[in-house]
Image (cartoon, rainbow, N blue to C red; front, side):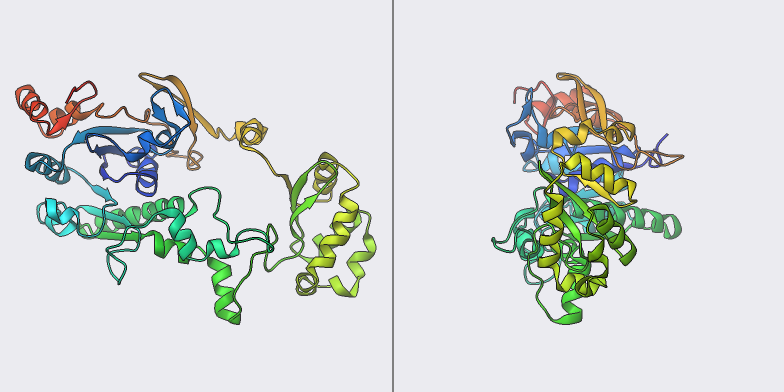
Length: 402
């Protein structure tokens, strides 16, 4: 039994940030009703690659949910979702600010009939401010909130992080906000509106980089793979490739110098403290790389581990999943899909709770796979009513021709 067993989630979100949050809730045992338009979540068509007819993108953020197709352009479709909201503990949406009010699906409208509802809005810029009405997406917000300005080589231009960094962090932040509101509801008996934006998360996630600017007034610059405040803390070039290592204090730096057979560097006046090492980073890198380049990556990883230093390879995704640690930690989950057979999905990082670990609750649903089930079991509709709604193109099941 999951920690969120008996919690019902009405998921009106699509793409990544919202679906990532609701997938976490599903992994923890919540029943998630994924409301989709007749053409489905946009990411169903985002590819290649595809696994059969489903995109890898869609599969990454929708496991364990139930898909119900409802046409919100139809009055009856709006009423169906309004009725579902009266049965939900949590609602998650990522529509542009104000759009759901047109359908009577905004927080104020739904809270009248379900005061205990925890309603999470995940948007580009939040519910307030001069940009509130604007759409937002990950890459644009990476540019706007600072991460691109400090990512990439110093000799190159601003660089986007290779994964939808802000979407993922916004999904995590949304989950924290939702669970916080759910806990508070246990005390007050009343839900609340959880307002989370990519903009806010992007800025807050700049952490020590932003705080350094506030402390010094100096605009941070790109440093490639180096750490702005610690040296050495970066990639180094062996004879056959690169690896990552770090010396976070003077003792670790001494051990690093001894391991690479440059013990005199530990007593060099230019490198006696971390501040001096940061100040003299270019010559520090040059000296270390000149020696490290004489041996292959495996030699240095083994030697630096023996010295008690953190050292890792720079893996491709293939190498990630071949790593014994990934296998031991069950980084892949195998689930059975009704049309694709057994497929591998990314495992949850919350699967190691000692009492209520995250577990796969099912496959990413086929479009409209659970429409009839939800209408029948949650709203108590008759088969005749469901057939009429399908005929009127208000709803769609997995095999509907409309």
